[in-house]
Amino acid sequence: MNSPALPARTSGRRLPFLFRRTWPALWILPMPVWLLLFFAVPLGLLVAISFWSVVNYRLTPDATLAAWRHVLGLDFLWASFWRSYGLSMASAVVISLLAFPASYAMAFVAAPRQRLILLGLAIAPFFTSYLVRIYSWQVFLTEGGVISSIVQAFGGKGDSLLNTYFALFLGHATLALPVVLILQTIALANVDRTGISAAANLGARPRAILFRVILPAARPGLTLGLLFAFLLSYAEFVSASYLGGGAFQTLPILVTDLVRAGQQWPRAAVVSLLMIASLLVTAFVTVLWAYREKG
Amino acid sequence: MPPHLKHALPIAFWVAGLALVFILLYAPILSAVLFSFSADRFPSLSMSGFSTQWYAQVLTDRAMLEALWNSLTVAGFTALIATALGFAAAYADYRFRFFGQKAVLALALLPPTVPLVILGLAMLAFFSRIGIAGTLAAVVAAHVVIAAPFAMAVCRLRLAQLDRTLETAAQNLGAPPHSALGRIVLPHTVPAILAAFLITFAVSFDEYVISWFTGGLNQTIPVAVLTTLQGQVDPTIHVIGTLSFTVTLTLVLIALAVVLRQSGGAMSKEETS
Image (cartoon, rainbow over all chains, first blue to last red; front, side, top):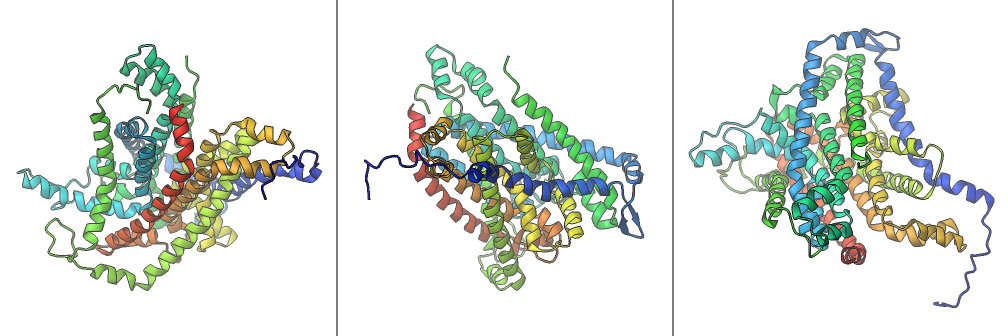
């Protein structure tokens, strides 16, 4: 079986011309084709629908700006927009700060083998039903729930924590923490160790190593973590309705209400496109910043 | 860690941060497990006793079992297709220079940035037009779109650690492209492919917005939970959570064992250099 003396007999072989030409396409094409068909086309349709009209509760192809005029003139739309955007950005920043010490511990304190186990444990909750975990937080936060019982045992008032920003933030963190932890830990663990050692050998203080070597090198991954925390929080609508109560009317809730309550597809399409536009601008600016040249 | 790395703050600070995050992640799961065995209908710290009645109720619920089967089918097909697409795209980006490369990459990274509510809306509109709305195939097609970018990212990150000259060298020595791929690239990427499969499976298994919009009468587990959530307090939600957590934790542990064995050598090399 094992014949190390076997000559490299493939060396002279010519592959068929057709194979050489189609080989790269075999790898390049599948993803863009699938995405064009099931992603770009549906979104294009949504753009078209924003110019359609609803006649007798039926969506009818049209070329009207009625939906755009109606939606952009709504005061409560703009209120929802800024509320959604601000709350999600706040959540993203807090989640990133909360995750950083943990990611640092996994990347630099834990041994490589431990790191893999910890990362696995951090990912695992991502696999469990998100909705069930939101339901669980409800049990913790409600009046007479787990947290208020504990607070009362220590002589506090123990009011319900539902319908507060804290509850909404817990929902966002429940969704985004695993993703942020993974992105941050990978970024930190991939920081060139020789650079760190060199800085240390040259007498850099620990704080300088953290802020001038580790953080700049890990910046793209850390920023991506922040961006994903924002994207996930911005799009999330379950914790806004079940933990935040009616207190936080966000854009995703508005979209579902428009479709489910009134078959207002064109208006829902307009709100959707506004959300996408704001997301794209945010993502673009963030990514530019993450990969900007140092200096 | 390099033995000479001095931390800017005491190790206790970083470890405490780690503990806090893990409490946040696991408190809701553990409480779901605990209350799934509660004899009471309303979960509270003063439990009157333990019971498995809610398990009996879920496991004899025909609709729930059907939802579970739907979820597994959709997640399985989604993970297979998304991982294949993701690896292909990652390998293409790593190996070839082609026209529109940046555009393809940008397109591939877009889906996770689009809110699921909007995708659900757009896909429902699209699938109704082509007449497949309400089928599981429609849900799979949609789930692949949101899952494949994750698979691509995971594979691409792993490929970035592979010396690009190895494969070119193999081909210069006469190895045909598929043999260089099979002998050099694939063995190196296997842990990432496995991770990609699990991640995409998870993304699909837990996804409820698109399934809710496009699945029609074919409920998956998360959609069933969502419908229950909108109603009254229902202890069976804790049971469903406990069951799905048990299944997925087992999966993750198996995957982890494989990854540990696969990358054990590479990891320690990278650490000691």
